[in-house]
Image 1 (cartoon, rainbow, N blue to C red):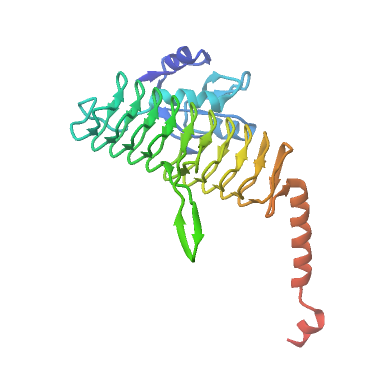
Image 2 (cartoon, rainbow, N blue to C red; image 1 turned 30 degrees about the vertical axis):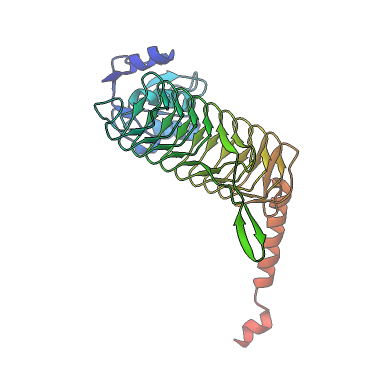
Length: 335
């Protein structure tokens, strides 16, 4: 069992309260579970916390909660994310570092302490970096390269010649390096264009479950360092993202579009091909980007526009539609 004092010492947090308090796990304020540690970032949550059965909280400096043990950190949600690593449980356990059912080509190279689960397949001249973990059913095809300490969850696929940096995470069913949607129509038939490029995922990229990132037609599709890609996202061939982008569920980015650094695309944003999206741009959910965006800021709508302009347009639209829907007095009397 982990004590509150253990947590404070591990992460260098100031402790107010009983250091010997045993912590069974973590929870949100509204979960209201005894024996757990939670966090508070606002006055509203502080009031809920004070009335809860939760014995301990991570709070901002000086924002102590009466009657509760508290750990102080300037960013409580960040602190709780780090503390959560103490409570992670094993996801799949087997006795051998390399499961006997795995199929590994003799020319493949495995670094030290690599773990290979059941029914994994690794192709010719593939390279698996030190400390990487490949769970059941993962496929790594010929000449693919994985850096150190990558984690590939069940049924993730890395196609031939693709490159993953260090600490890359692929959630279940992620597909890296599938063929781009490339066809040329000739005499009424759609003829497949071979996709000769690859995909490069830089360090600390995470790719969500059942997300697909297509290989480039001639060169590479690239996802920048620290970018996080949610479930069910589609990146077309030759897309390039900058660093630390956030691509939320069901985003679709057409081929050859480039994203700058720290771009956030909320759920179901669609992006046309061959566009440039600048640094520090956030686009709200279900928006459609049909032209390049250069200036940092918040955007929304279809077609996308600065969010203040979109909000004014929506207010006017609904005001006018409300007027149109109001029944005429004479017609109403006739009924």
